[in-house]
Amino acid sequence: CAASGGGSAGAASLDAPADWSEGERIAKYLARCGVASRRECEALIAAGKVSVNAQRLTSPAFKVTGRETIRVNRKVVRPPAPPRLWRYHKPAGLLTTTPDPEGRPTIYAALPKSLPRTVTVGRLDFNTEGLLLLTNDGELARALELPKNEISRKYRARAHGKITQVQLDTMKDGITVAGVDYAPIEATLERSTGANNWINVTLTEGKKREVRRALESLDMQVNRLIRVDYGPFSLGDLKPGAVEEVAPGTLVSAIGPLIPEGHRTAGRAKPPGSKAGAAKARAASRLGRRRGSSNVTPKGKR
Image (cartoon, rainbow, N blue to C red; front, side):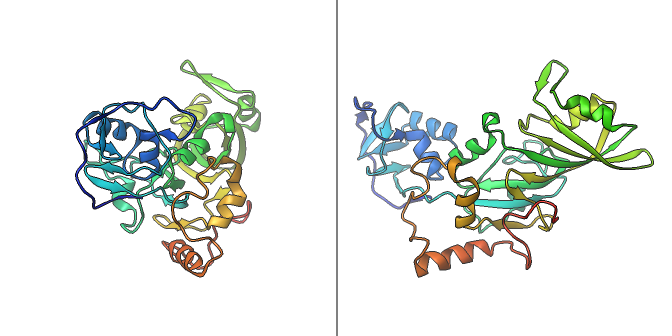
C-alpha cells in the first residue's frame, strides 16, 4: 500500500469518535497500509501530517474503518493489500534493520528493489544466516513472533567444544542464563568433527541471541548458525540472497488461523481465481525464484 496524489488536508482538529465498536486505531491501520511502522505513524499524527475526511488528527486515539478519505502529507492512502509473505535466505554479515548508524550493511540494501515495503518476522543476528520471513502485514508478523503461539524455529549450529547428548538434554526443561529465563529447548547432536560439533536446535521463543547463549551456558562457542525452519516454512534449497514469495493459497493453508481477522481479503486485490489475480500472483511469486524451489519445503528434504 502507498499514498497517492491528493488535495490539501484541512487544519481543523478531529476529536476521537464516541463509538469505538468499529474499525481499528489509525496508526495500526496506516502501518497495515505500508505507510510506516506504527510508532512512526503515531509521530506523523503528532506532527499534524495525517487527516481523515479533510480534518487533521491531533491524537492517535482515533479509529477508522477504511471507508474514510485518509491522507498522509496530503497524499491519499490506498487501502491495505492482502497479506503476503516471502522467504529470504539471509547471508551472514547483514543487519536485520533499517540503515545502521555505524554504516554496516543491512538486508534492506540487499533486497530486490521490486519488493513492496516489508517488515521482518523477528530478526537474525549479524552473523546468523538462513531463513528470514518478510511480510507486508505488521500484524501477521507480530502473530508469527508471539511466544504464546509457540511457533517453532529450527537451527543448525556449528559449535566448538566438547558436548554430549546428555548435556544437551539438560535444556529440555528450560534454562536460565545470566538471569534470563528461556523456555524448553530441544537440541540434538548431529555429528562431531574434531573440536567442532553440528547441533540441531529447536525453540519457540526466539529471544535475542537465544541459541548462542544457550550453548555458551554449556561451554560451547557457536561459530556458525543457520536457521532452517520457521514454523511450516523451510529454507529448502533457496540460495543465499534469494527471495521467494509464498503462494497465497499456501500461505492461507499453512498459517490461516494466524492471519488477523479481516486482513485476508483486505484491499482491492482481484479474487485469487480470476485471470488477473492469478497472473499477478504468478508474477509476484517469480521474484527471486529458482527452478525447483518451493514455498513450504517438506522437512527432511533440504
